[in-house]
Image 1 (cartoon, rainbow, N blue to C red):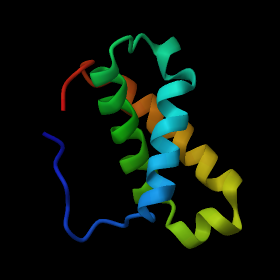
Image 2: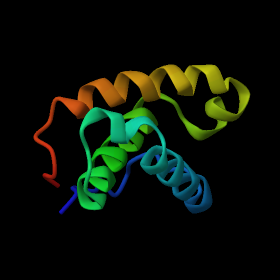
Image 3: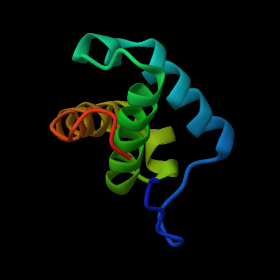
Image 4: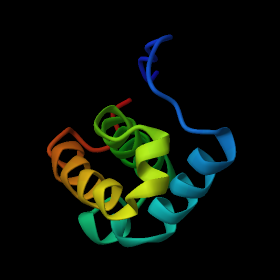
Length: 85
């Protein structure tokens, strides 16, 4: 199960859902995540790590900052064992 910090910076639910959908249907598959469960874990990790770096209001003002944090988070999360929560 994913660890959740109750005080973590969270985006609105619909924004998080959209990010998950885009991640799962996007280039995550090219990183070797070929099961839905593994994709979910990878994408959840990526979004969580990006949220730590860029608050929601900052993402709205400078989406390129979030995009950069997201790419770095993908690299970090891709080093974790595939399929682990």
